[in-house]
Each structure stands twice: as structure tokens, then as C-alpha cells.
Image (cartoon, rainbow, N blue to C red; front, side):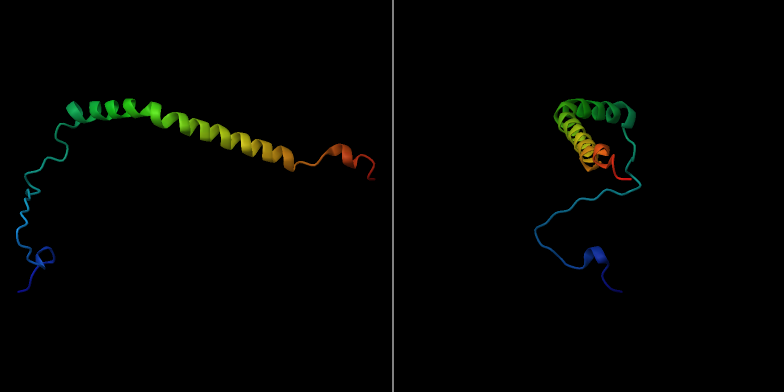
Length: 82
């Protein structure tokens, strides 16, 4: 009747290739190549990403601890207030 959403415009000189979803394997080589690839990528980037994250965590915890200490009142200032 009408055109489908994916076929609204006709574009010349553009070649597209598609593969049927029935011919794809969702977990092809998942255990043999996928998990070792994840480990390789993780181990290559952990020394780049982890130190700034650790530094940011310790800076944040130090800042919140110092802020709590500075917000506290000095009990010696209120000894004779009765």
C-alpha cells in the first residue's frame, strides 16, 4: 500500500548490506573469544583508570571528614554557659 518506515526515501549510490536475524548467532564465540578479550581490555586499561578514581575517592573522603571536623562546635567555648 505505502512505503515502510525504512524505505521512505530512495538514496542513489549508497549500497547497504543486511543479514537476516535468523542467520545471526547472538553468542557466537562468547566463551572462547569474548571473555579473554574482556580480560585483555580490562588489564590494559586498569592502570590508566584506577589511579585517578582512587585519588578522587581519597580526596572526597578526606574533604568530607575535614568538613565535618570544621563544622563541629568547640565544647570549651560553652563550659561556663549555665
